[in-house]
Length: 301
Image (tube, rainbow, N blue to C red; front, top):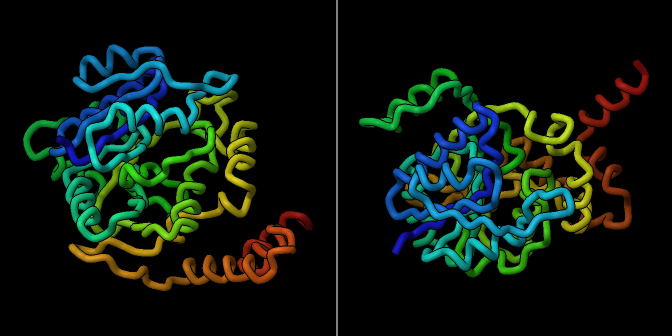
C-alpha cells in the first residue's frame, strides 16, 4: 500500500508549454517511492496524458457554473480513490524529488494530525526534463544556479493524514484564497502546521496566466471573491507559511525562528484578537506601517 496519494486537477494540455511542464511534474511524481497519483477532471488532453504516464484518472469532478473544478469534489474523489494514509493536493506544475517522501515519512512518525507545506523554488523550464540517471541531482544543480526561492506566500501543495480536512467548502481550484484557508483551518483545529522548506526542495516551473480568463492572475477573478466568502472573510485568507507552527529540520520538528516577518505576522494576529471590532485593513496598517506608508505615497503622487 502506498504511503501518499498525490491528487491534482491539471489544466488543459492544449498550450504546448503548459502541457510540457505538466508532463514534467506528473512524471516526477511517478518516479517517487510509496506514491500513487490521481488526476482529476476532463480537461482536453488529460485522458491521453494519464494513460501515457501510467496514472489513475477520474474524470467526473464537480465544477462551478464556469466549469472550474471544485476543491470539495476533488477531496472527496481523492479519498474514494486512495489507498494511502496520507493525501496531498498539489498543483500540476510542481516537480517533486525523493526528499519529499522522506519528509512525509518523518512527519507521519512525529505527529498524528498535521499539514505539511513549504516555500517553492521558481525555475524557468522550457524543455522536457531529463529523468534518466541521477536526475534529481541535476535538477538541484539547475535550481541552485538559475532558480529563486519564492516568498512565503501562496502554497502549491498540502500533505495531510486522511482524517484531516474531512469537510471542505466548495472552493474553486486555481483561484486565490482556498490555500490560505487550509492553513487557517489547521491552526483553528490545533493541528501542527509544518514548514519543510529547510529539508525539501519543491520546484515550481514558471508559466504565464494565458490559461485564465483575460490572462489575469488568479487573484483578479470574481471566483476569488467567492473563495474568500466561503473561507469566512478576508481575515481567514491572510494565513501563509509565516503562520506555520513548526519547521522540519533534519529528523526533528523545531519552532520557526522569530524573523521580522514572523514577528509582524504574530503582532497582526494579536491585534485582531484584541481589537476584533475594528476593520481588518486598519489593523493591517497598524501592524505593517511600511505598507501603509507606501499606500500614502501612491495616493499623493
